[in-house]
Length: 212
Image 1 (cartoon, rainbow, N blue to C red):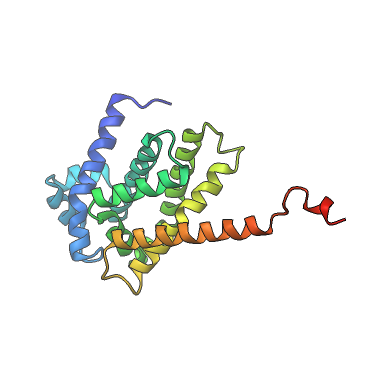
Image 2: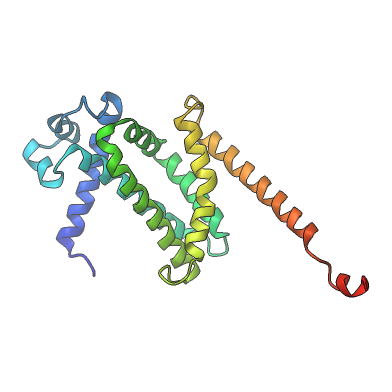
């Protein structure tokens, strides 16, 4: 169902307020930041801020949900002939760079904040669903009845998840862009190796007949 103009404007302003307030959360930490602090950072009154957000959690996940929507839009907009897995990975890389890694810094903050962890699982499901639906649009498929978008999303996320897990863990001091490059290169190399091994094991045409 199409949204009316008022609701579209409300959603746009909600995203703008969230983006204006979140640098303070990243700087101070979630627990040390109040709703009043966030309203001040966004340049509006506390009363106005509460019209758009019911809690600090709401501010954080409003941004991450919008990031997922933008990722989906970017995937759909990629060149039509591009491999769908590559489309996901390139879109992810582009948005990560455009936001100067802010989205991933925020995801790392969420993982370290007990008050946000429960919602984190729901947010990840939203992200995956957005990517699956975007792939379905690219391929002209119905994601409810065709498993291909789900499978391609899983394949595309494999190197992205590996890069983020490294960045959240023992390699947190490295650039996320470099880790993404390394993960995708490793993924491509292992994919090519497995394809080559499968090709070696595939029976040659006529091999069975000639062995008799």
